[in-house]
Image 1: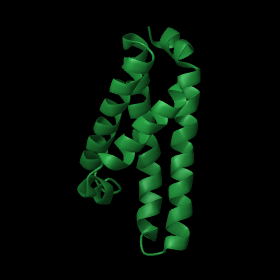
Image 2: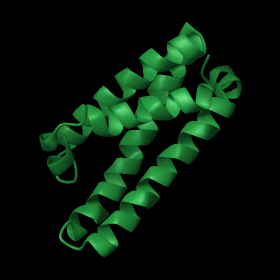
Image 3: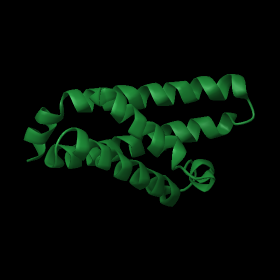
Length: 119
C-alpha cells in the first residue's frame, strides 16, 4: 500500500503539478528543472511523512527530489529532441518513468539504511 501511495505522489509531482513551462523548459534551464524538482520533492515529502514518519519522510523526500533532478537532467535533454517523433518520444518517456519507479521503490525499501548513512 505504501508503494502505491508513493507512486500516486510521483504522478502528482511529475505530471499533475508540473506546469507547461516546467515541462517545456526543464531540458534547457536549470531554474525550471530545479523548480520542477522542488515541487516534486515537496509533494513527495508530504506523502512520505504521513506514510512513514516525519524524519524518514523528510529524508525520503529530499533524497528523491535530488534523484528526480538528476534523472530529469539527463532524460529531458534526450526527450526534447524527439517531441515531434512520438514513436521515439513515448518509449523514452516510459524509460524515464521506469527509472523514477525503480528509484522510488529502492529508496522506500532502504529508507532506514539511507537514514543511517545521513544521520
